[in-house]
Image (cartoon, rainbow, N blue to C red):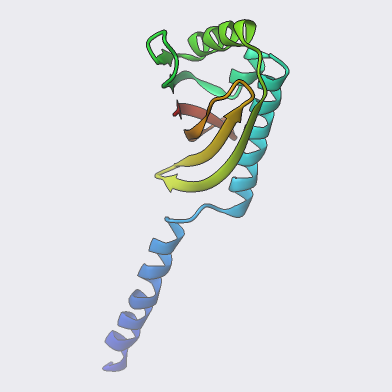
Length: 144
């Protein structure tokens, strides 16, 4: 009987840190899925395909573009697509993104990437991805 509390303490002592560690890392397969999604979006951008750029956004997505003179934020996939179409029509460019880090945020994933446009914009993009019907979708995107 004296051994039981000691064993319980050891189990708890090893289990709690292991569970906490799992919540601070993203499964490598999920990271690959996010990278593939970003590559798909970038390919659509590079083909001047505004609908393709936003096809993996949620219906209620919010995108903030800090250099946009039209208010900076677009709300809803339709508004984001409209802004992308206007930008691509006036200034077609190539986009290159590199995924730097991914973090779990509850059931979502926060992805931080570096980007460069051929028209001279460089910076970072922070995207919150959520699961929707077994697919990752961008819910919030901030270009800086």
